[in-house]
Length: 193
Figure 1 (cartoon, rainbow, N blue to C red):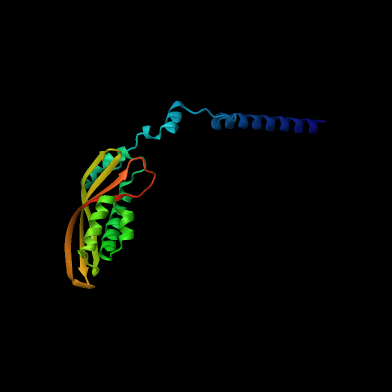
Figure 2: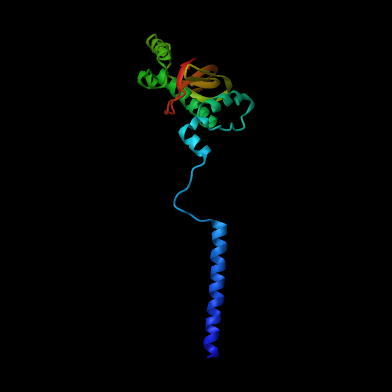
């Protein structure tokens, strides 16, 4: 009989330990009821995502004006924008030099496209030019106006002619890229040179 009483006593101890552990886990982890209330701030953010204050990352001195772009656009990332601007600059210049109006039409506003088209028709392009280097010196201006945002960049490029690196010429350009503020597209259009 004594042997059977010890088993019951051991079972009671293990049951007590298990109950204690379940109680502690429930207190630490909480319990789920199947319905989680949304807080008022979550509901406001879901209804009006533009009400969410985005923080502006640390910008270099020549990029500080881009803080306005962070305040205006929900999905703005200055590093992606500047890399995209470099790619667009090279693509536009190469398309211009190669008489590629179709590519230009997809990257330029209507007014600036007309200027580029006229320059191509007048023979003011040079198909022999290639890029040697390209840097963005800084952000000249950021303007928000009439549901559009315009970012003006100072760009320095080195180009050479007919595969001859001895013909490298350095050029500085001021280009403005434009986007509709409410556009879901990531494409910025060249609006001024």
